[in-house]
Image (cartoon, rainbow, N blue to C red):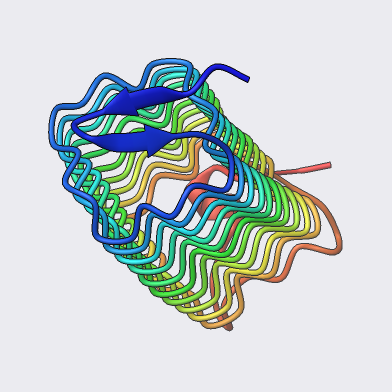
Length: 232
């Protein structure tokens, strides 16, 4: 096995890098599977295509880091800082992102199936065409988020803040949006079949061409037909 050293730290699977200072480090393609990076500083680091499967990145600083195509499946990212990070095409399936800050991050076409993001900050995040099936986003902040064409099938968005979010063409089949704030959100052409929007705030939301079925649950007194919803 080739041992790689960066900034005096040994980069290898299972490495103990707790609190490591790796700001701006080039870790492209690095194998850090099951490594301990708790509290590490990886600001602006290059982690493109890196393997971080099942690693511990609790409270790590990944501000503006390059994680394009990185593998973070089953990784612990609790309260990690991803502000402005590039995660296009990254795999974060079943990762723990509870309380993480992803505001302004780019997750276009990223895979987050089954990930836990309860209470996370995703304000202004780019999730165009991302896979968020069965993701837990209860009480998360998705204000002004771009979710155009995203797959949110069976996602838990209870109490989530989605003010001004763009969900045009998004798949929300059987999603839980109970009590979510969708004020001024764009849901044009979205698939709402079987979705639960009970007690959601849909004030000034755009629903033209959104598709619903007999199992879709809208807030009490909400006139879906008048807003342009198509029942199929």
